[in-house]
Amino acid sequence: MKKIILFFSLLAVMLVTSGCLNEMVGQKITVQKRTGEENIFEDYKEVNQKKQVEKAYGIVKNANWENTKVELARYADYQFQFPFKNSSENKIASYLLWITPNGENLEIVTDTNKYVKLTKQDSADLYEILTGEELIQ
Image 1 (cartoon, rainbow, N blue to C red):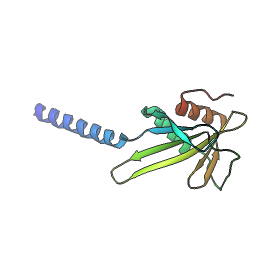
Image 2: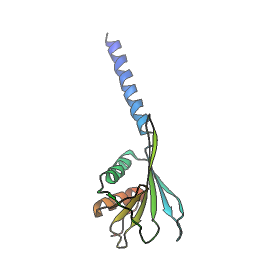
Image 3: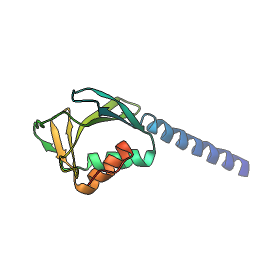
Image 4: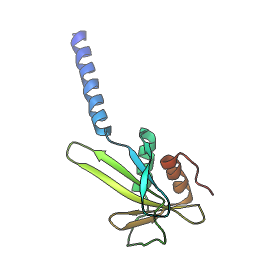
């Protein structure tokens, strides 16, 4: 009896673990940095650490987005994507990111014309996750 319970317990743990791993497949952030004065981006960094991805996703998801078409004076400094894969669909959320002239905040625009200027703290946290560097303040 104990062997049967142990077997089913191990089987349940394995199924739950494999399900969680499948859900996390593809959960990363790809970051591209603008090169030169043109609107050309090159691969810069890939963030794969689960806690960093979740924190960045939380910052972006919980930001106070505005539905407005914003045209900023220069090309974006970075662009980043969250490719999430689940059993029903593959989605890529893409964002353009600017550092404000004073270097204290980040501004983000989506391809669906949503805009946000992040708080200083969220800006610093997101910038560090995306670049591995501190936001100059």
